[in-house]
Image 1 (cartoon, rainbow, N blue to C red):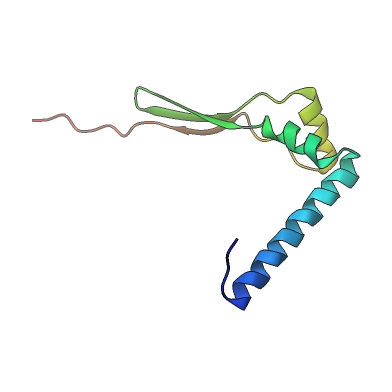
Image 2: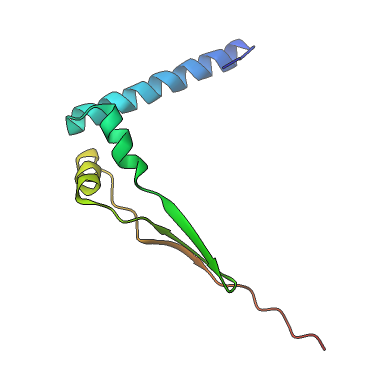
Length: 94
């Protein structure tokens, strides 16, 4: 990253340290290496379906390994259905 002001350089370093602390905390809580944790978390996605003016957002299925990992990390399982939107009805042309 290229930052030119001292404030931005300091903020970038702080974010990097925070990310490293989060990784180490996850490794300690689960007893797993970060690469395995990241791989398991990568399986969790939000998928958007659009059909006939409706939009549905739902998460992918959570396997037993991922469920156990989320529990160890103290993260609640996301709802299956995240969002549902209906198309707004347009008035008929007169």
